[in-house]
Amino acid sequence: MQLREDARWALVVPTSIGVRITPENRQPVHTSSRYLMHATSAETNVASVASYLGMPTKVLTRFVEGSPVSAFIKADLRSRGMAYEGPDVPQGDAWGNRHQFNIADSGFGGRAPRVWNDRAGEVGLDLSVDDFDLDKLFAEEGVKILHLSGLVAALSPKTSAFCVELARKAKEHGTAISFDLNYRKSFWTGREDELGAAFAEIASLCDVLYGNEEDFQLCLGIQGPEAGGQDIDEEIEQFKEMIGRIREAYPAAQIIGTSLREVVSANHHRWGMILWGEDGFNVAELRDIDVIDRIGGGDGSVGGVLYGLLKGWSVEKCMQFGWATGALAATSTHDYGAPADEAQVWSIWEGNARVQR
Image 1 (cartoon, rainbow, N blue to C red):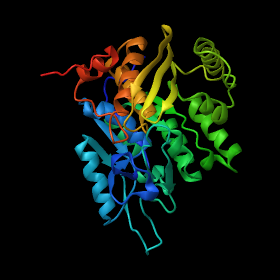
Image 2: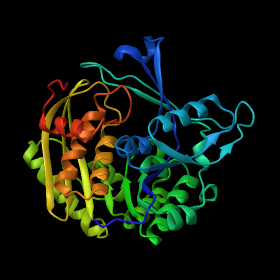
Image 3: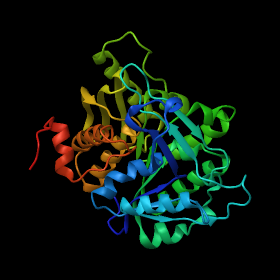
Image 4: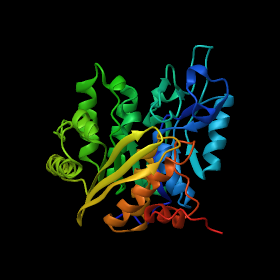
């Protein structure tokens, strides 16, 4: 896939970022009193792979003026090597703007993880193209890849319009566009027609489309694999057939991918990936991985694929790296993969967990 060479930014992500609080030691939320808090969003989870490996990334978002949570988020982005841009918006009264809270435990064994989102009044609901100088960003500075997520695209009518306009502007200036569909029922209920139209337009402009079978079915109306009853080889063939239907509906897409996950227990998954591109289908069949926290594994895999595309790798190599960065994210209490270097990622792909001195 050809990318702009005259670009300051390797990867740009729009997002509504907030904080996640997770009980210590994999304990459930309702019995815990000690928590880890960290900044999180699906889009910055994706961008972390490239930023930790030294590529210039930028986050487009909104902050609450004077908020200690905003200061915490900004410090976190700086620590990950990410630039950020966006207005500081007054909180207003005590019922005004704020950043989202995501309250979640990691689960253990047969006790599944549970996630509780509290997004009322979050500052990112009003994201707008008026918040940013898009001509400067895309025309003067230049962006190689714009990555969009269905989470921010479906957050509110304003963010849907924002993502559509971003995709149009990116296309106008030769920026490649990536879209991880990330369907969430709570966002779509009662808005199916509105969001279906917005997602279809964004997808029509995209070079990279990513999601699971539910994402493609419910966001874009693409028929997916049959539910249950087939072995893994049959399931993979059905995924390939689904990707064929996506290619027919969205012929501009050069890369189409999906993560494969079989949950054995909360801390033991079987993890795989299918990535279609110019060299055909590339499949990482299900392999056992250990899981500290599953949240962000899919984001990590997308981040690895995009990093590979930015490096100019083959689709097969991008798939391998993306599989491994997804597995890497699952080894952390944070929601993102933070590779020390490429060698660490390739060791995961190779199954080499021997100590390195």
